[in-house]
Amino acid sequence: MLKETVFHKKVVNSTIRPASRMAILSQREIEQLRDVTGTGLHRLFRKCALAVLSSGSQIDNCEELMSLYPDFDIQVRERHQGIVLEVANAPADAFVDDQLIEGIRYHLFSILRDILYLHDTTSNHKQIAPNMQISHEIFYRLRHAGAFHPGKRPNTVVCWGGHAIPAEEYDYTKEIGYHLGLRGIDICTGCGAGAMKGPMKGAAIAHAKQRHTNERHIGLTEPGIIAAEAPNAIVNELIVMPDIEKRLEAFIRLGHVLIVFPGGVGTMEELLFVLGVLSHPDNHDIELPIFLTGPESSSSYFDAVIRFIEMTLGSTALNLVRKVIGNPTLIAKLVSDALLHVTKERRQRDDSFHYNWSLHIEKEFQEPFVPDHESMAKLQLSRDLPTQELAANLRRALSGIVTGNVKEQGINAIREHGPFQIKGEPELMNAMDELLTSFARQGRMKVTGEYVPCYEIVKATATATGNQPRIIEPVTMP
Image (cartoon, rainbow, N blue to C red):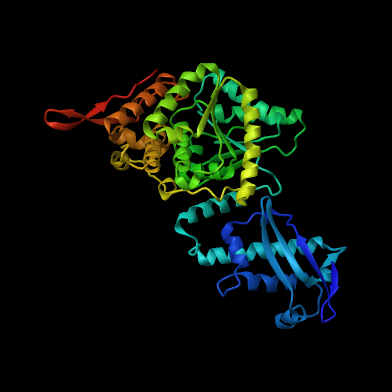
């Protein structure tokens, strides 16, 4: 609304919405822009913004300009679907019928972008809490890749599953994707073959039928994986994270619902990661639904997975998942309902739709684990550990097996020094041996050819002379 200041300058109060990816800011960036102290960015942004809004003025002196508009202010307000800028007492010449001129809006958000970038590169995030530094890095990488779509409600379903799956399971993943696509739901996977391709392919067909033109098929990968497994052709947003830990965190920060299809060691690694994170007391009220699903033929697979979770992480972690077998339509309806619950919960927590800032993630889930013979042998695997720590170490053990199976450095290490050794308490090692043996027998370790195990499981057994290690030979399947 137009009004007069004491200087008889026409001014406007307005809410300005961005038309670029700068609609999405991190919590830290918003804090910086609101901070009026000497270390904050509010004063600098206010001066620069007033200069931009005074485009065409003959004044080239900052102090004189500020004196003409002493009541001018600009504030960043966070919304679930992105930020807005609220300006008070801004120069009226920058507006037409109370709407900001488009070219000035572009300039305004350009200076916002570059002020933040300059500050980030010089401060190196030193003022961010240590446990959030990696989460902010992941946010910046996802934003740089264009992964955030302002104005869109929670609609991204992460699908995990194996690349080495039988035809019946692949067709099932495709049918699930089809029913999700009919409902306009976006798909995010690890971008490879098998259960990562199927949901995208099914969704692509459904999106075409529904005439959806902005469908998203997001593929999250990392250099060690992508070097061995090319993205499938359906992926239309490919994002390469620096390592597996940042890739896994990106999945659960970016996604709103998780679907886990049958898979092998990599799928189990992903599931242990999210269950370990959600088992933390600070995440008790976080809404991140997890569905385990597959055709009727895969029911025994999930029974083995559930037994392993219960044996290792206990009933609390098990209660985080829901098993639904052989019913794609039901899964799609449950996912649609879950997305509504997530939307409601994000609003209640005043959290963004596009990035789950509220998740608390401990450093053992974030710090890169480099699997080699020494680090694998040193992993502590005991149910005496806190649930989160045990989940993190089990995840690392499985990550080592993935490395030995498909990654160049792991394959070379196994060829030179023999299998990795995984050591732990007998009951835990029996559970892991049972799970991995079932994966090998079902052909889930390798797409084609003979699977030669890259690991040995070692457990302590009571003898007359004390506790002695005993090696369980892994299964080799043609």
